[in-house]
Image (cartoon, rainbow, N blue to C red; front, side, top):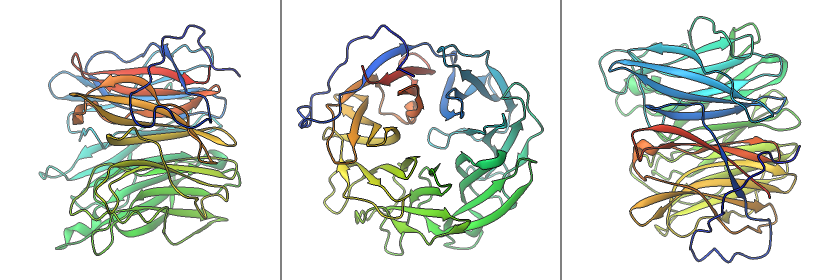
Length: 403
């Protein structure tokens, strides 16, 4: 299916040393797409259904104390369904970086997660989830995603649709932090088609405290999980864990950047997969205190990665996301500093290392309130979603892809 929406507005190339990139993939084109979200909305995310439609989730602030998780579906004719409220509450933990997750299986089961406070500590909250069996039209009772009941942090969730109506869930789990100097951990669980939680598994016993996780499924059924790791010497590079043929591998570095930082940068990686191709995008300062957004490709289901390709324009803030467009090319988005503002930038990058010129998707703020832009495949391009904070707070969407 060709990239949808026939009328394009101008593509703006962000001025940078990389604007005259070597010949390679064509620069992505931005096309308008009206958002179904209204005012006082943010913390959006996307999930793709096997039929090519997309689910958009967002947080809506309803009055002084009530927060709701809302969902709408983008059909192949680029029309949004009527928004449906998944859940609402007055005791939610709402955070610019720790946003809800959603995943949809082939058989119409949609799963969404959000965070609810527990106890009196600011950063004590649980992951709650709910399931829909009719494509998101109605929702069952919420349930806890994890078995830990400690009043600690549980969040930064990634949900991935697996085979046979199952969902793979990955999150940061603070159960070990009840003891002095206890570490943040990375955990996994599988939600069955019957709603039962199985295969609870510790993936990494010491990780960065508040960077996003990301997960994807390859063509042979390998589940890949990327996250910001944390060594005993405070090196916080990106690692990958893989479940291949039902067995988890030990975590391995995507790239040894050597970024040593005594605190969480709140800037997690993103991963995407198609067939045996896996692509990871991330922000790093490396050993030279030089900010970069890098992309690395794997052709063997995430077992090994090639040399990282730097894609930013020289002043990146990070907040990356990535999607594969074809067997050799991915599209990556990130935030770049631009005067007193920030720019959401998009760029296509080939596994061979060639990159397109960068494209401006939208101007935004570098503040926390602007959150993290998210992308997901739609047609032969992607949908980009972000929070516009120039006038209040509102979730915006656009189509980005080839001409």
